[in-house]
Length: 311
Image (cartoon, rainbow, N blue to C red):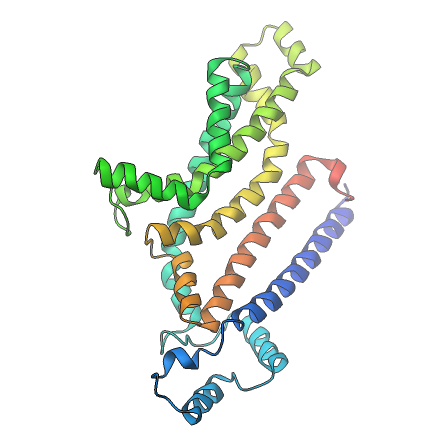
C-alpha cells in the first residue's frame, strides 16, 4: 500500500469512529433521561412543584431535549461534562479522573496477564492436540466463555475469601486485593484468545513452510515460537481490540462485585443517583477508549495483512 492509500484508509477509519461516537452520545443522552428527573432524588420528599421547577431550571432540565443535547455535545468536545448532580461541587470529569487510576490498574493488569497466559496455553494446547492437556484446555476455555462474569466473581469470593480466608472480599489495597478482581475480569479474555491462538496455530503447523523448516533441522521450539506464532498472531491481533474493549466495559460488573473504587463503580452510583452528567461522561469515556483501541488495531492489521487494506 502506498502512502496516499494508507492515509486514505486511516481517514476512512477516523470518519467511521467519529460517526460511532456521535451515535453513542445520542443513545447515552436519551437513555440517561429515561429514569426520570433527578430533582426528585435531590429534594426532600415533601418538596413542592415550585422547588422541583426551580432546581430543574438550574440544571437546564426544563429545556427541550435537542437544546439540552446541543449544549451537552458542545461542552463535551471541550472535555466539559458539567457539574455532578449527585456530588455537588464536583465536576463529572473530576470524578472520573479520581477513579481512573484504579480502573487502569485493574484492566491493564488483567489485559497483560490474559495476553501472556492465552498465548502460552494456546500454543501448548495446539502442539499437544488431542492429548489430556488439550482436553483440559478446552474445558477451561468453555467454562471461561460460558460462565457469567459476576458469577465467577461471587464464586471466587465464596471459595478464597469466605471459606478459605486467603484473600480479602472487596476494596482496593495491596496485591492481595487485586488477585480476585483480575482473575474475574481476565478469565473470559484468556479463554477467548486461547481458543483463537490454538486454532490459528493448528492451521500454521500444517503449512508447507513449517514442514520445510523442520526438514532443514531447525529446533522444534524455534519452529513453534518464532515461525509459527509470528504468522498465527494476525487473527488474534484482530480480536485483541475487541477483548481490550470488553475489559474496559466489563470493569463495571467486576468493580461492583468487588467494591473496587473505579470508573465502573462510579457509573453504577451515578445511574442510581440519576446523575446525568456523570453517566454521560463515563459512557463516552468508555466509548472513546473502545473506539480508539479498535482503530489502533485496524491500522496495525493493515500493516500486517495487505489484503484488508482496501476493505
